[in-house]
Length: 163
Image 1 (cartoon, helix red, strand yellow):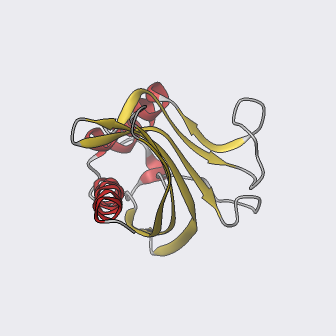
Image 2 (tube, one colour):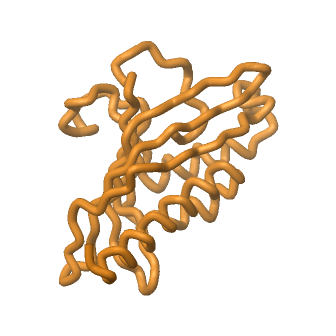
Image 3 (cartoon, one colour):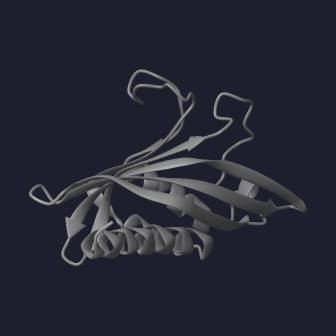
């Protein structure tokens, strides 16, 4: 791997770690700002699910739905989220699968574990992330984030937070 490739890998990894930190620190508005205007967060309900338009998804949020969900996070009357969960996102195995410098777009894959603690219970989610990123100055913005749970076809409790 060349020095430039290592530097790009480090830059992408730091972006993904920063995104995870924003989620864990409940810095929702900053997290939402990582997305492009048409950016999408998608958690499919099956490993081989081809799209979210014609199939059920665990989460499929465009900018408006992210805004609604984030507003709900801050609402003290959202009793299903009281007390609000604490989370710890761990990101590993970061790979850059495509880096198109002429288009300013990258495709990354990584693995994650997310620990959630709420109401004296801990839940663990794990799976794979796929980030479609666009270069934005010295940083990136998310065009599409796909979070595929290892057990996405299994019975899931109500999803309260982003994986």
